[in-house]
Length: 527
Image (cartoon, rainbow, N blue to C red; front, side, top):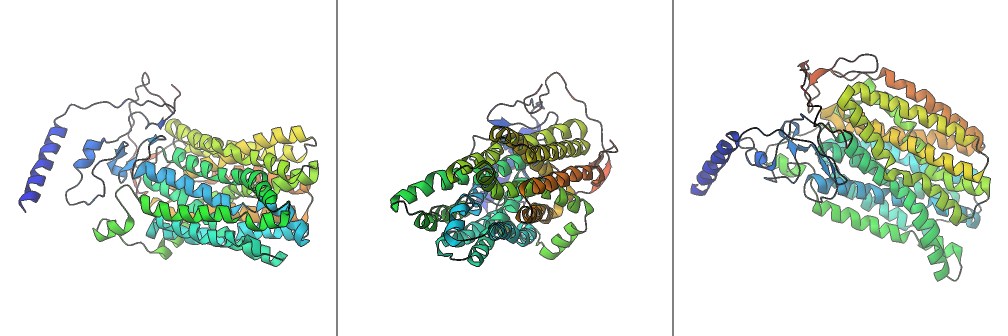
């Protein structure tokens, strides 16, 4: 009791000292290691965290990044070179888990031509297996969304990675088209990790920088699909083939064990070394009375009832759905149309995914930047322009007849696709903040629905017709940005914004005008 009383006195003394310090204006600086908060943005230092609300339990007394106490201690900056808990540890665990999930999800794609020859499969059977791989994820994403609101991203990441690693390791057991289809359907469990990826960073970073945070972890995670094209198709497959005396069938039947082991280990390690939220794990917060029980059904149905959720569902189908389709189609396309070898086609196809290194992040940065100057209207305009550019690029790609030209257009095509994905999840956290997990899951499922629809086109039609239909759908989806109206925020038609509680989404009243110091303000590195 004496120790508790002494700690209480020290805490009061710290608060007294802090409140008597002169106000220091924060100057925002951006460099290659940090995405800084915007000028005039309310934030707190690590000293402020020590003097939190009386009786409130927190796992950490100080943070390595600036946070906003009005947004549940979410970070107002992104320090890329930091691995400190909880914010930056979650950031890096999020993109790495999603990277590994993508790696095992599409590990079989560069091997499909070899599998097709050995098992005597038709084009339709190969595409049916690809559709099963992305289609099986639809239900998973719908379910994982509301589960995130209840259990957090960390636990679900571990479950999905460990679970998906098992069918991945069993790739060598397939002997028929039906076996391949069923196997890829189960591996599709890994695709549900997108929801946990985006939820985790939305839980750790404030609304002002969440577009950038979501885009970076999503883009770097998506990179796994490109890396797997090279590692599995151009490196591990030849190595295993050589090890088995040039026996290609033995090579593809055993090579998938490698990514399966890595995925399982990743799931276990991340579960042990990270946190669900800035203030601690959900189980700990509930024990200390700092978190209410969440009904998964209520979370799901409230998200479903919001019309904006479904507009973003369609738009995400036309960007992430396109990327998933290209992950399955690109290697086959360059082999069938331009006569490339399995190794060469895989290497060229990987270019599409390599753009994720920066393209999706660029979309998030653009969304955050326009939000700073134009509010939600800026985010919606970014969404419209990027989807419009994507649709045009797809149509150009469909009519490009030379290998060099196709590669050049592929790069442009990929830039717009992934930037549009980044801008999409700059909008999602605003739609219904208390049920963010369910909104994230539904919109994310849209990407898989798009992949199924476009996959059916590629299965039944020739490449040019399939690409033309896909491009036309993307162009049409760009127009939907004009119909997104989020309560309290501006839209493409109107500029007026209200003051909104960023955690509940409730409108508080007219938004006060801020005085901006234009002489020292920097926005993502641009003065």
